[in-house]
Length: 535
Image (tube, rainbow, N blue to C red; front, side):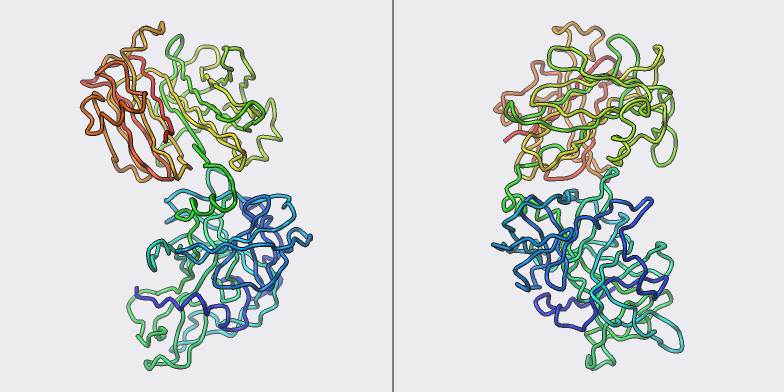
């Protein structure tokens, strides 16, 4: 579908409407309070008023909005409090502007830094309009024109249809207004610029885009008489360039939100937060007893006064792949957290038995009551999470560590995962969500050298694969010395001690990655997977 994107510098002059249009209703009171149920906590709480528009708090002294709005106020009203704007910063490539305020904001939104937005369910927030007159084309209702602006904050839902690029770095999330869409299917109008789009990331709603623009239409082939509307079917209408929309299937109009993820480095350079490191690490492996338990290690980097709040989950009964239960999943996992000396810091069997309220608040509670979870605020140092089966039962289990304080100064720096590697699907799987925009990712698969540390039955010849969020193979290695960049691996000081062991060094960028460790020639044994962020 061909669309015309109106210049972002003039968008906010177009029309008087100021808000989210809903497919289901024209009721001006609909969706004017914070979402509840599955959409609770989906970003409403992070929105503030910037003149007649919205901005989103993103750090203790900063909020972000659309660059094309210009300077429309010297105040930011957030949760009923006035904050004084002292400075602004423009994204050099995209329609984003950050404002600094003198006073400290009480809370702020985490950023969505992955590159997998397409197809994701979203919540969009804008500032107030009433749905306008029906748009009738060839006797059929095709949507609604923009109505009266009332500056009331509203929300709706939708999903990301595609990523559109309008110049280097000017990436937009493109969202369509579908007739058979979500219960709160929504479109935006001109005054919604500066409002926000939030995506759910593992139970946490994060800022993924800033409302920027909409598709436009003309009254005829000459391109004159432009009008603004949210259309679930453009057929029979003329686009802003004068082309007639036709076809056998409905063609919905869409809106655009300036994408946050490609601008993460610029945003972090302004707001002064540290490079976020690893946002999430996980390990899936067959859990047995003795040396065959699942062990996940992680390092929190920072000075002795800095801490990191994390949630650790031990999953089994809920493990699925594409909706199909994982064969042999462990029925009743037990989770332990140990410090650098090996002493037990905390443990859990059945997550509701301890910290239930605190775990529920994170949005990361396991879906099965037999699964384990614990929350801990930890000082900088080395930690180990151990997953085993209650009463010695075996099966496939998953350890996950989530950063609950991504804006803090301490960082999750590296992951290690030790487990038994079998054949077929009984491999060791390590998941990494990389939030760093400035560091490289080094992965190692170790086996033979584990014997020196008292591990019996070590995997003699491990091979390593790295896949992206879509499952596409990014890199693979068997025998690190044969890697094309083996000299760079050696220069890190982290090259494996045995030539049969594997390593991958790659500049990944932010996103979700999966590493798989298997034995060459169907060999089996205990292996260690490690992921490091390095300069």
